[in-house]
Image 1: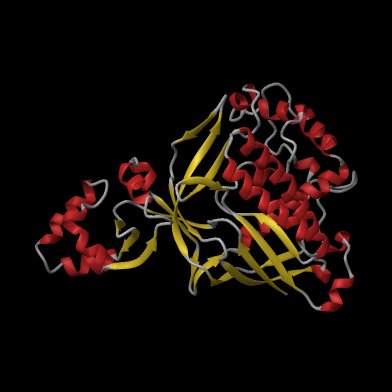
Image 2: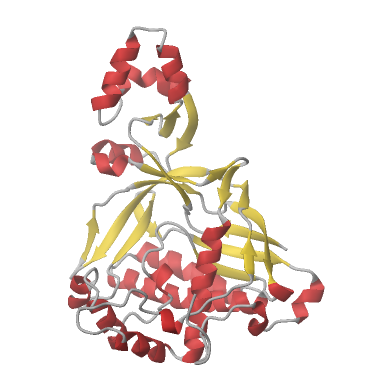
Length: 368
């Protein structure tokens, strides 16, 4: 079966690489990625090679006044900024903010790794089954495993056993462009503050970008899976909207409410999901009620989250927010998935046949 994925907000599924400030130059409101191999080959026949290598070795960024011609003539890629005003922000940004995460690419160009999509779907399915069994029961089971200061290595292992007969191939980009977006981390304290953290500039595909690939589910049971995904996304959006309202970011509230409204309009072959970079803690935890006392007691026992829980503020208290036209306007990674299925498969819609077993019975093994 084919799937089509359309990005609703700027999205990054990275390849693990970053452009360092000496790999590119900002010129004419675009990031010009330098073809370093070509430059070094050319300079190898010139006395300027030693000067260039010395500057690369010690410089935080290349001097445009000295090497700007290379940005014009020896750029292997030119990535436009989302808006020209980012240039001023970039010029005053600290060095650690200038390392730009890049989108995943393959032999055919920009691609969406199937593993990123499968991982997000799996989280939604775990949440769906937990809701069927009762999240309080799952959380209490996990809380009972915490003894004093000794935290089990696999805290939720008895509550989760997954075998998913689901395969997803990498998606190829069919349309859309890449741009450099300005992203800042919102931190909710008594009032909203913006946490300066790296990266601040990110290569993302623009809203409306489409990817297409192949996927398969045993017996073709897609509708019930998509229903679980939409229910999970709706619960996740409720948390984000509540956060944006408390932080008083009205443009972000409007953006999130539009995504939630689209869930209500979806057919059985369409789902809304959050994937990739910037989805944060909530996008990976399969827990939607972060206000639960039992859940907060578990997090409080984990050193990484102790201070955040003690504040009494909504958890998590940070969000990565994409600035559009230099206004906080969107959360990254929200996409729409549409599946094309033969008509004969649409009459079989039971989640139990999908091959996904997320909550073991008492006699089942707890091994994942």
